[in-house]
Length: 507
Image 1 (cartoon, rainbow, N blue to C red):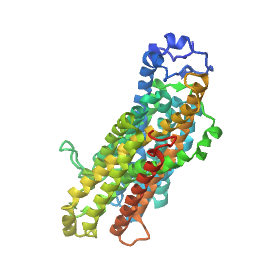
Image 2: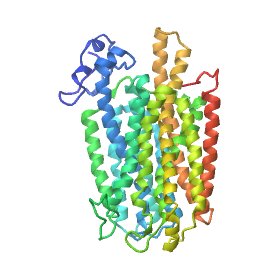
Image 3: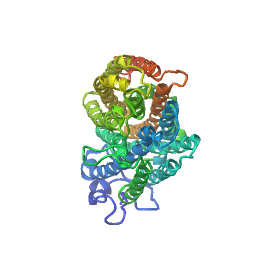
């Protein structure tokens, strides 16, 4: 029996434990527990239809839940930072932007070890650990915001631990990459990532309601008793426990997902790893960076706190979540389009859209009057431009989501195409080459995801620009730089992946 099964009622579906596809496979290594599947052949159509699909879908569902929670914790500072001043913490705009940037930096650095953790410990096992680690930033957050004497550096340390949630993305994507056949990776990875990305939108929508800072469609009213940020932290701490238990009960480890970090890190010598990293900075880095910065951008340019509690102008809590929601929904669409038309073509369209929409947002920013945060008249004046600002920004977010899905489709396709070009079809060499290509692609996903996520740190930092006295001037300069970067990415896609004669062309 080559697929080892967990105890009845908790493991893979019956078809994952029996069937011709399983009995004919060579015996795999024996594990200590029964939560390991040692025969996994998703590229075999019969195995996939009879055995693989239901197991993969179940693991995908719980992976989405855990990753969704990780993203929520990762971005909890993006909206909570806007409430810190109201709770009595005297932080400047530059300090607040840094608080929302720090988790993105830590999350990006953790992505490489988190990617390798799947092969070293098992996808199920690492999901248990990574979900439990989310208790550190959530409980730390709850303690910090309930003490007005908490110094700024302590907030920075706790914000850094929120990066654990960003690392979850890499391990989750690497794990799901092993479960699905190449033809279905784009859609599966797109759904997995979209479920995680939606965590950004939901934390930005629900946190203001949970803490009493805003109502929700008339069903819930803003609290009259002040802001209680610790409530949101405790809610997500409880959800972290749920994710930990769910992974323990209903996920599986794949014995075929074996990595040797030293060998897998050879992907850093591969030019495509760095080319795709440049592109992923422009797609995912933009998504996470804009998501983190958008609440503060709205607050600083379109709202003043008087009269309390909702102030004058555009209240950020009602709109901050929209960008992340649009980008999240667009991500699986990008994966589906890439499966159908090719990842490089869709990535090119995404970057053209990013460049155009960024210039449109920049145009609206140039029409704004610097907001001194104490003059309701200026907030009202800027308010008339908010529909254009928001509309163009949502188009920008949609392009980041489509680009996220298409670039993640390109990565395994690049390595698979190389394996096909260097081995004869229908031979054991081709099978070996494809297996190695899958492992290298998973390693590349970790490296590319880590580098790309650094964009989530650089974007809020560019908006804060402590070297620029006027925040609005810093915002204008930042959008100019971003538009130029997207134009560079257009050139890279056309030159490397859509040029005739290239090995990796039209992936």
